[in-house]
Length: 69
Image (cartoon, rainbow, N blue to C red):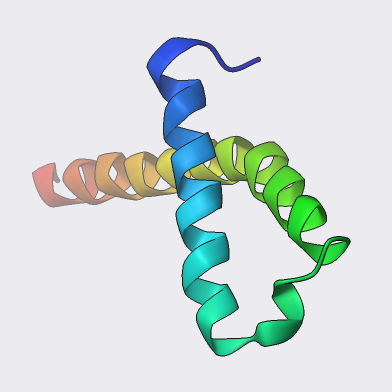
């Protein structure tokens, strides 16, 4: 569950991404697709960001461990 500033961050990311992508894809500016886009970004964004952060940290740790040998 998102709280505070993190929650607002994802709402802003969802809104800005909807506006930017909607500029080039007019079908996104739809009463059905728009809310689905916003919910999808808000629900999938944090888990994807966490997964990506874990992948990056794991690679950095592995590269540092390999460098010490």
